[in-house]
Image 1 (cartoon, rainbow, N blue to C red):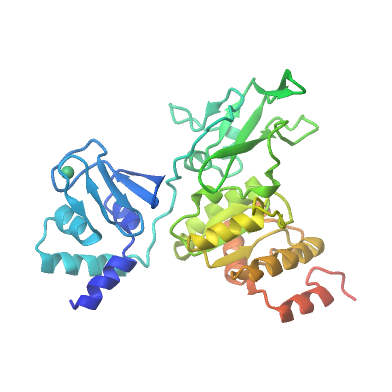
Image 2 (cartoon, rainbow, N blue to C red):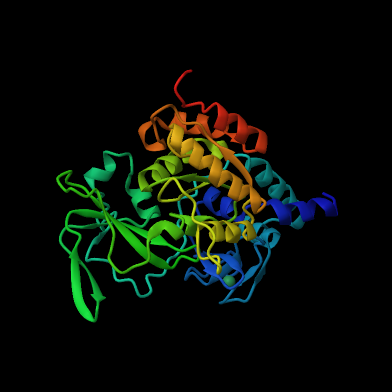
Length: 361
Ligand SMILES: [Zn+2]
């Protein structure tokens, strides 16, 4: 292979894909210089104590036991035990295979910092149990883990108001954590599982509202494409649908918590500011997947205009009338995503004048 091909490998080869392909144990975390892959085994010295750290994008890193300096090519050479020429052939083979992408189910490491969640059981439990309520909604154990869900059977959120210690019950609720892009826990939602509560969702008092964050934004890394749904169950349905379609496994689903994008904060502490940060991480395209409904589409046009203004390519997906991603089959979510239209000023006028969901005139 020519030198150009070596550069191509260094640029394009997905190190996470290689680990998935070979079933090599690894963890993702956010390091000082971007996402980091922490591998259990060092192919160079054989150590299995999680001492290998590689930059997830560049593949550059080393083993802290034997000090072997890794690059993507050196990793391939050591791991497959090949001569250089064979290692290049192997890398080329891997690149071809990358058309097939594994599910991105390893969530980034998160930091619970100052927010102490109500006492709750992590899902799945140590015995691998998931909540039936979630299973019935298609959210299997691996997705409960991906989104960091837990179950509060009986517990309180403890907070201080006017110098007084208070507590707010979150009994019988799934706790949905909300992280900032850096993986720091900011707030959470409690979803009633009994169907008996007046309030489907409960929000902890005295914590910042969800409206400035992006649900699952912490898992946006090494991708150019995100899709934006509304609430947790829409985001989960989108994630599951994309994972089921090989060509969409690189798309990360995030949630806006409402059919509105917050913007205008001087310090960028709002959703538009967070999309700006995602753009700096390499995101190029956002597809809005709110409800298939007249007002939701108008809201999507407004959001699309804002996001286009910061230099992103924005598409709007049309869900079937009256449905959101959580209410249709995965293949319908996939088709809506694939058929989404790029927002342009012309499309904006067209859809505002003649809303596809509007009453037939
Ligand atoms: Zn080593």
